[in-house]
Image (cartoon, rainbow, N blue to C red):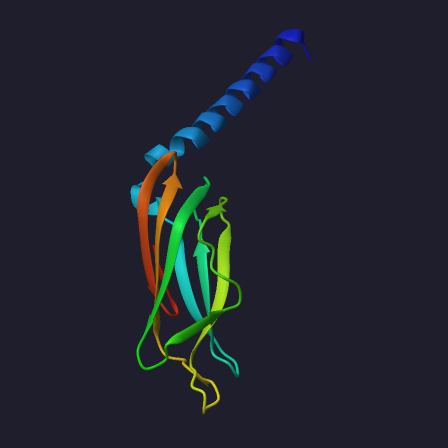
Length: 150
């Protein structure tokens, strides 16, 4: 192989790497804005104690930072208390294709009765300030149990 061929091959690889880097850096500005949002999923997990799983997924190829996240759970009925497996994060950074997951149960607690669990439809809402592509924006997502929203 000649010296000129090796130089041409190195130059071609360099241009290819430069093109890939520029495509990765520019692609977020070209992709439609609706795909820049995280996805919120709420699912009812079967079991003796009905448990809801909330999954906030970042489907984008860039990180998203959420600040002052407020998680709201709305259900129908007299079930007023919700108990989480761990407190939902109020400040978090989601790396590309990463998810934040937590679980909770809803119950009606009184001093005379055992816990009576709720297993009907719930609405989970997330209100936060999102930092995506160096631009802060208000993020509002909502999802019913066993559904997905973006």
